[in-house]
Image 1 (cartoon, helix red, strand yellow):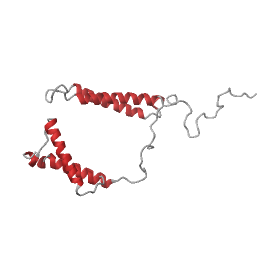
Image 2 (spheres, rainbow, N blue to C red):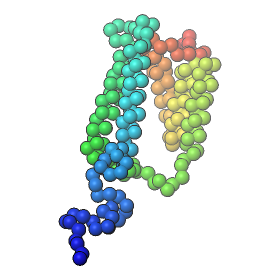
Image 3 (cartoon, rainbow, N blue to C red):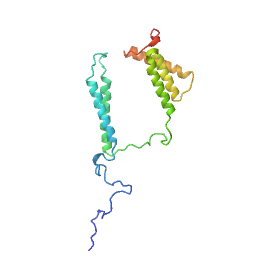
Length: 193
């Protein structure tokens, strides 16, 4: 006597899709809630980073740099709170089935080799800035940093680029030094600025 399996039973045939994936809803297959949801790792990282930033902001001694009603902990509190909110929103989206599109939004060719020349030029410019900031001061080393970064990223105008870099460097120096009260090394230009 032969019996037929009840409706919906597989009768010994696997109920997995041809690619090996289960037709079951995410989180109900073997592996539990986190299977196929690696974005939750990013959520945990953002959550931990937010807690770290908020902890540092709350324990920060604000008397040394307090200028007015807004202290040095204001921005870290805003950033830490933003990180916590984004981590919760991303976790909710992932648990509801949202998936990030893999490399779909970027206009890059994954098979092309990396542009190591640009990476090395930028690394050299940043290293030169770190070495030159004390002897030359921020206005000069910052101008070299901005001009070198523009050059490494493809801008080749011999007149415009150094002028914009110098102006940007001086404005940055004055904003930090005079407006924010964060002293930057002035170097030989200290008496001029």
